[in-house]
Structure formats: C-alpha cells, structure tokens
Amino acid sequence: MQHGKETSLTTTIRIPVRFSEVDAMRAVWHGNYVKYLEDAREQWGHEYGFSYADIFRNGYLAPLYELNLHYRQIATMDDVLLVTATYYQCAGAKLVMHYTIVRESDNALILTAESVQLFTTKEGEFSPTMPPFYDEWKRRHLK
Picture 1: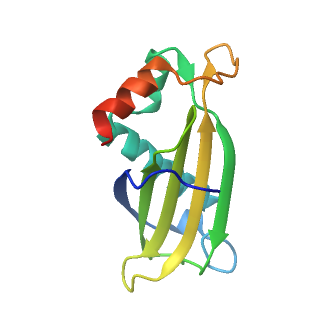
Picture 2: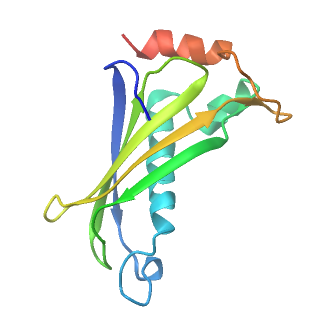
C-alpha cells in the first residue's frame, strides 16, 4: 500500500491488556488487535473531527475495504500497549490509516497495520468521488 503526502495526523491511546483478551498460551488473541486498532481510530476521529458520527451526519458511511496486519511480537496479560493511529493524506475518496502497537514497558514493536476505508451513501451505494464534507475537512486540517 502506498501512502500519499507527508501530511499526517496522529493520536495514541493506552490499552492495558486484560485477562479476557489473552488465549490459552497467555498471549493476546490475534483478533483483539483489530479492536485495539479500532479504538485508536475512534479516538483519532474524535480528536480531529472525523468520527463515525460526523461521517454519518454528512450522509455517508465509511466501511472497511482493506486491513493488513503485520504481527511482530506477542503481547501478554498485564502488558500496557500504546496504539498509535496515523492518518495519511492520499488521492481519492478514501480514508487511509497506519497503526503501530508498542509495549509501553520496553517500547517493543508488537504490530503494524494499515487500513483503507471507502465511502458509501447511507443506502450502501459506493461513492467514487470525494464527498464534499471530506474535501472540506481536508482543507481545514491538512496543510
């Protein structure tokens, strides 16, 4: 996946790993990482005025089109993870995010990921052109 310009907007959240999130091997179950990424994406949206509620209010949805995860190390119960979501400006009517998860105690890289979300109308119709609200948001937040 190729990223656009150097302009990016980033947020980091802190997630303590809970007992219910680990498997029988005491490692974070792989599916939980997707939830951690989504938690960071939601926080990013609230910080930068591009939450799912904002998208919906403007008559659109932003379903996930592509998600790539690259597992580097395991995390275990009682680890505290720092999950960073970074928006990358790119051409087209899509929302591209890059994520990193590191363990707070030793800064070990646990996972990297990328996601692409496309815009649809509330009725589920794909929107191949830039939604006006997204174009306006880009003008306000990106240099």
